[in-house]
Image (tube, rainbow, N blue to C red):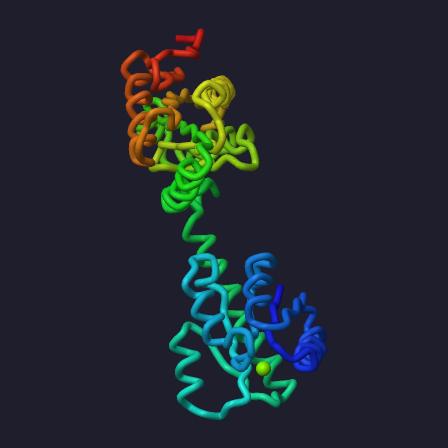
Length: 303
Ligand SMILES: [Mg+2]
């Protein structure tokens, strides 16, 4: 894990670095408050050790600035202070620091406090990750979609980068559950999820939207290329065979595809893809419908 040490004294930096390097940590040093802020933004550290007394910018001001931005809210800060004044310690903790170490510090105490803060950070990172993943399919969940769509929408507003969005739903899924039971139903859901994962780019976000509903968020894509991807997924799902005690279960999926052209909110993008999906369901299922022209671009030859 990466630790950033911010201190105006080169000697203090060298000592802290020497103490912590023993624990196999990646240590970055920044001399002074504003250099520290730059390093924090550049290096994305897991923990920040922050001197209070610095001539260019106090540690309190650095901490206030860090904690004011969303990207550092979850990054623990430990103050390094020469002061034994309780008010200073309280002030630091109130600004969002998790701990403080009094200078001159004991090497064992510094290392123990750093380890404790990193342990908590690691658990917190795991919680954030698990709160965003669907446990059955390991696709992203709706919480992750909402966050990611918000970020992509901000990019769209800054740079005009378009976003495409696919909504999909397994056709007549209730029949699978009712006929073969939930274990086979879950297996079908996982196999469909795998098709979405295998056809997504690194930058796409495949999502389990609900029970048998899926979505894919495609940053910097048009409705046409998203429809091509949906059509490929539709064809691959047709070839899935799930073994249910000798019987081969197959399913089909309907897709609605939209992009952000002419839309004014992230919610409108989801609604637009949802309306196209509704159209796909209403015109016979197992097909891809794009929102703009409500065009069917792909349809099974089997039905
Ligand atoms: Mg100092």
